[in-house]
Figure 1 (cartoon, rainbow, N blue to C red):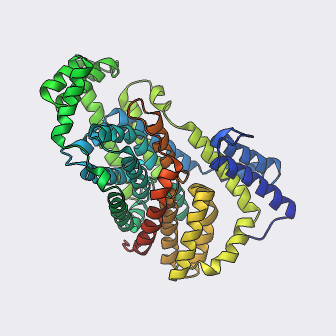
Figure 2: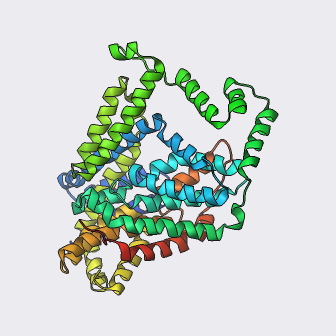
Figure 3: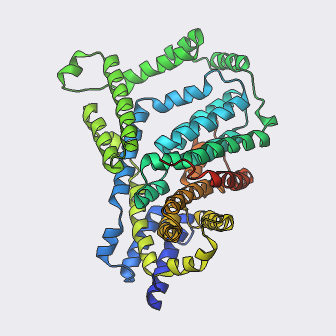
Length: 478
């Protein structure tokens, strides 16, 4: 695209600069309005400055992506209510053989789960579990928080639903779910393993911790010292962790999950059977949703259908569950779509890419290296989703001059590098910030993961994992 008029280039750059500043520094002192309002401000400025028309602005908002994001959050809420993430937390602790074993479990479970249920969701629900497990075993918290954040980002790279930038890439590239998965899976598995080894090497001595017997003894002594003799705690002392889990489930069932309905079948069932039915249904339809993705059905409408099925079968007012949807994220995406579309209309991104394109051909090692460095830097300067929106079409168009298979590989390379780039610093991805904030605000075992604590491991991990994964991208084709 040729450069627009000078005034449009200048005004569009100013609007994009405002969006970028508030996306990277949401609490900047002279305009502390946050990322969501910053995205809307950028969109409004694009229209007010006549960089983009109102009709083009509406057309630039990608409704399929917003629909998929919305539905995924609804499904995630029902799965959380069904106890799926609680089971994952128990899986991490089951027969753990020490700190190093627990570290490996956190890396593997987080990476695989993030590929299916988004990295942000996994970080929200697993951070407190990780804090508890580390505290129970007298282990340092920092290595486990780093394992959780970095593994969530690496694992989320494998599927279109793993993170927002992959959603954008999947829709823009028209790559099917299964092709996307197989194209990045080898790199993801290798990256997960390398990241885990680097964590173990860096924190080997600190991961000694307490033995399983000492942990069990410590639990019992803590309960005795607290002197709390609720039915749940007494049952725990007598029968162990399994009894605790069962008692907590029963208590939660009586206190907060009283399912009321007028449906005849539900009226005839016991509370336990109703709860079991709803949990089972949530798991079954979620598996069905993943199968539908792999069969190539429309991802957005598949997710929306799954979400509405869960709402209908729940037989309750859906408002409490819908209230948990991050509408601010959806608004942020809407504003970002308009802002990035306006910036693209200035012709400036295309002009910059034209300068870099000759050095970024993906059929040469040097070209892949240059392209990866550009993506790494932009993903940390402008965030990964805007980077994908700005560079996606240009990178694909450049690859189209090589071959059709190069186009697919270029999209997958963009997905891999932009996602792993999130591990470079604490500000690199929302998942990192979620882990940091969840850990800092935890009611028990709180920990402040600082920017520098993250960078010390995140920088070398990002460079090594990215480099190891790039040669494996697109090796499996169907």
